[in-house]
Length: 599
Ligand SMILES: Cc1cc2nc3c(=O)[nH]c(=O)nc-3n(C[C@H](O)[C@H](O)[C@H](O)COP(=O)(O)OP(=O)(O)OC[C@H]3O[C@@H](n4cnc5c(N)ncnc54)[C@H](O)[C@@H]3O)c2cc1C
Ligand SMILES: *[C@@H]1O[C@H](CO)[C@@H](O)[C@H](O)[C@H]1NC(C)=O
Ligand SMILES: *[C@@H]1O[C@H](CO)[C@@H](O)[C@H](O)[C@H]1NC(C)=O
Ligand SMILES: *[C@@H]1O[C@H](CO)[C@@H](O)[C@H](O)[C@H]1NC(C)=O
Image (cartoon, rainbow, N blue to C red; front, side):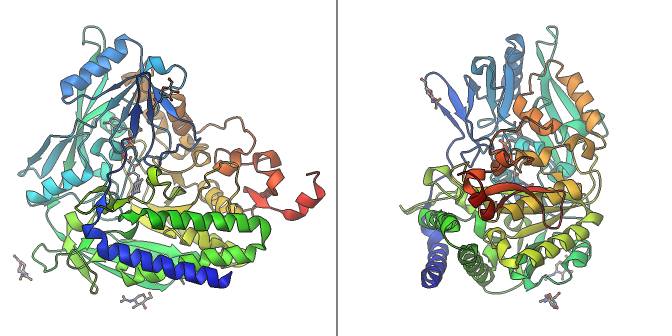
């Protein structure tokens, strides 16, 4: 088997290299439209094609306004007819089911799509501000702004998002400088369409700006206050960025992260715990006249040949089968080889940084803010015939994974890292290779925000991805380890879940983590008294209530297990305490109990 694995990992490297050399000439398929309709109904998907509970989201009606007045009329119509409404975008890249209207009666719901509401981008050069329609894509916004000699300072790393969608979930890049890494903290105004009285024509447009408390609610609103029509951002004079990646040891990372965040305006750290490696991103602003025409074409967001995606998945499946039959060490080893191979490759190609738009020749890589701040080349098509897509494209049965994003009060993050290191050493580092196969633990920075649902204090964001099985009843390799880290983050260290990511359990008890949560709910009651923009799906996230626990619910992160049946006793997974965080309850493979149980 060892031979098979090393051959396999060599193949992956060759594939990746081939793809990256060829990729500018290959044809990429844009992502599928998230809304699919037939004569009777429509189904809404997220970009991965699967919601957290794996149940489809239905609605009987979709409207596509193109102007603010059409938007207002859509809300008025819904108000008159008592419809439940959600706004959807052409991207639908949020993982939780926030954009799904009530499941009770599809005929009493309506989707308002911003797909055709994205043509206006107005720049005020004197004030250094830009106002954009909510459906404008981040890339279009950035290019337009940069064309006028200005820069938007903060952006999420992934550019396949809309202006309205990205602020609604608190999306962010990384920065402790200036207004910080969260994009909504650069918002200076927005217009919101909310239900109105008959006299007001059943819907009205509110313009919010300055210190208006309604703006504090509307900047990050999960789509539950009303429809965002336009967003105004503060800009700065155009600049370039200089990036160097330092692949080094992870020693001292638990203290180093504070210094790093202070020292580099856009710094981040990718921590690969199984490999004892930390990749420090030294990323700072340089004057526009600095020479360099580099781009940040992040590897994970480049087009992947479906072969690579399929191969990766087939490999993961192979391992899961192996888990039942072989000793766990043999398949863990496979995952580690794969993580190692990816790491070698990432280092070789600087994770997708390119000095001259096509190749990496050395550090630092210097380019314009527009070319460095965010990426997503898998979104766009170019010439040739071979089909390429984003790696997670549901049409190619692409990568399927969970994404946990925990936002820590900055001062508590160091102790969390110490706990994870302790866990790693107790369980053996190899058991964390499943996380390192993706991007390890990505560590980023955001500042305190005045948005009610933004971060109340300076924070550190931790992101990690891990394998999700096609079949919800199939337990995953080392799932107990990942669950322990997840619960440690959210419940021992009080991290707040990113609104656009995570499995449902991460939202348990979320209201008490936000000092202004009550103000947000009061604002909602005022602007949307009938709950037109609420659904049981968005309530689940916003109110973070414990739900009834079904069999196997912990396997999918829909609950924290408290009984064995919440895991998979028939497959040998039982509900057990954590190793370092003993209050955690995780689904753990415990073969001894299989022998003693009846099946
Ligand atoms: C590959 C990938 C990488 C990512 N990287 C990052 C990252 O680096 N940093 C980060 O912070 N996030 C990241 N995200 C998360 C992403 O930024 C958010 O999910 C974002 O909200 C998606 O925007 P969207 O336009 O697809 O909105 P959607 O997912 O379609 O909508 C999000 C929510 O906003 C509501 N909404 C949308 N438009 C409006 C409107 N006009 N008015 C009112 N409500 C509205 C929807 O109803 C929904 O509740 C990433 C996601 C993916 C898939
Ligand atoms: C199409 O209609 C059938 C019922 O006639 C329904 O079961 C199915 O889910 C619908 N598909 C979509 C994409 O709406
Ligand atoms: C990389 O990090 C290590 C450890 O912090 C440090 O000793 C080294 O000087 C750094 N290298 C560069 C190029 O900055
Ligand atoms: C960039 O511009 C500044 C001021 O305009 C000037 O002082 C500096 O020498 C320039 N640098 C380069 C590399 O041209």
